[in-house]
Image 1 (cartoon, rainbow, N blue to C red):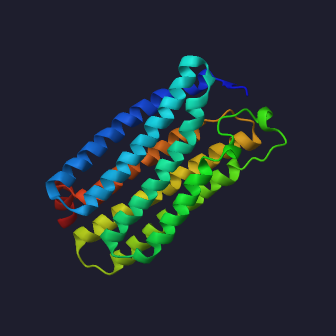
Image 2 (cartoon, rainbow, N blue to C red):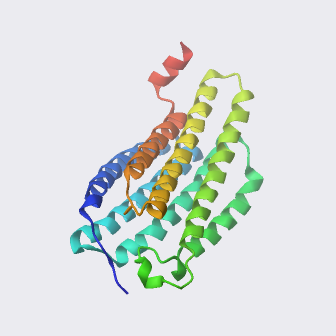
Length: 249
C-alpha cells in the first residue's frame, strides 16, 4: 500500500490547527473552572464537549504533523481522521445532554441518539473507508468513505437542528431577559456548527469535482465557525456580568 506525498500547500493549515488548539484549551480550562465553582451538571457537560472537540483537533494536528515530518500521509494520519470524527460524534451526544438539561426538552430522543452514534463510530473504523489511502490503491474495491462522512454530517445536523428547535421553543415560553439571551446564544452556537460542517461539504465538493487537493479556504472558514461555537456556547451558560448588565439595560 502506498502513501500520498505531503504538499507544502497544506503546511499553513497545520500551523492554523496549532493556534486553534491553544484557543480550545483556553476555553476548556475556563469552562472546567466554572464547573468547579458551580458544582452543577451543565458546565460539566459543556466541559466534556469542549474537551472532546479539543482532542479531535489535537488528533488531526498530530496526523498532519506526521505528514510534515515524514513527507507522507501515513498511518497516524489515517487513524486521526476516523478518531476525530468519533470524538465529534461523542461531543454531539454530550451537547445534546447539555441542551436537554438547559431546555428540559428531548429526553426521549437521547437513547436512540446514543445508539445511532455508536453504530456510526463502529462504521468509521471499518477498513473499507480507506482513510488517507490514495485512490489508485483501492480501485475496484468497496469504498464506503463518502457514505460514512455523510452519515457523520447528517447525525451532527440532526443534533444541531433539534437543539436549535429546543432553544426557539424555550425562548418563546420565558419572559426572563437573561434566559432569552442565553437561549439565543445557544441557538447561535448551533447555527455556527451547522455552518462548520457546511464548509467541509464545500471542501469535499472541490475535491470531488475540481480535483482540488483538499484543505481549501473553506476549511479555514469552517474552524472560524467552530471558534464562534465555543464562544457562543460558553457565553450562553456562563453569562458574564458585563453581558448581563448589557441585557438588563
